[in-house]
Image: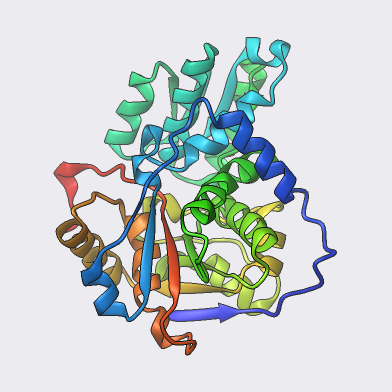
Length: 329
């Protein structure tokens, strides 16, 4: 495992999302989202030397934390905006989350998905009643197709991660987490586009300034690690990882938060991801997807990088949407 860290700046810095926004989002989604449970596993604790607490967003509606941000984004739309529906581009979990949230609010949803997206996630989007538009599997194609759909329909764009409403919504997971386990000293969350990690950092550091927030990232898609190391944004290029939810680059909203509010980025290998996913299924008896396994693997390896002794470590299990016909082992 590799780690990239950076010093923390003055708390006066503003990032467009504050704790008040996260608390407002928590009120907005309370009637729709699950308050997900926290589990522990003594076997994993013994293996890593820490007390691990797992926030089960894999048990969230639509199978991932993304439902929080999607509901918060739609709840912030005016009645006139809702009439035209919402549009986004996503390889999976945000697509499902926005489709389900749109169905709950009774508005149209247009979802642009790359042709390589998991068939399980694509079918779930269709089952939630959304329209799926396929595109080539690259960011330019996703964005251009989504823009064309928006121009055609007048729908409101709801980005998968780089939006203050999304960041605030995702931050509600750690808000609950710290109510459930107030003794947490470290929180680890996976990072792709950075919506979950940046929302986590904003909320956790505001509630408990001494808490350490780490991002977890595959070595084959390590733009956050390299950006932190360089002190400037380095976009993702040609990512290669089984963790399909972590393929995207950081954004203009998420990068500054991660740069200044996240303690460091922990990277793990593909072998670690697969082995950790399998071990978690066997030992904790809970299904997690590869992106969640990235965070678990990073937390399991934290002892090598943090010499603070035994810690109370919170791990956000970001999702559990897995194609059971294509398990990596």
